[in-house]
Image 1 (cartoon, rainbow, N blue to C red):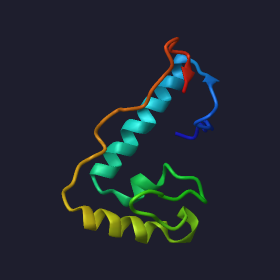
Image 2: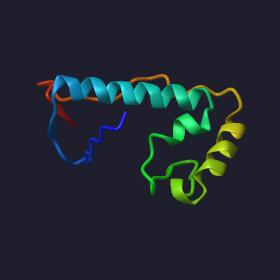
Image 3: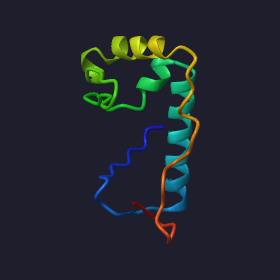
Length: 97
């Protein structure tokens, strides 16, 4: 998928049903790649300067993320935690919130 959708958490953006379906597919595929510990498949969802932030952090994609991600996946062992589809859409179902 080459379609880019840029959304800030503070921005409400009107989206079409097709865009909503695309977002759901991206989230599902990202989650599947995470649980499969597939570094290459997982990395395709990050921008060149994108990185992981949180409990585990990575270098940006263009500066060593691949090695960091492989280490993270190795430390997780068989842990599966990305199967939930917990994204939200607004009550009117036409906006991301």
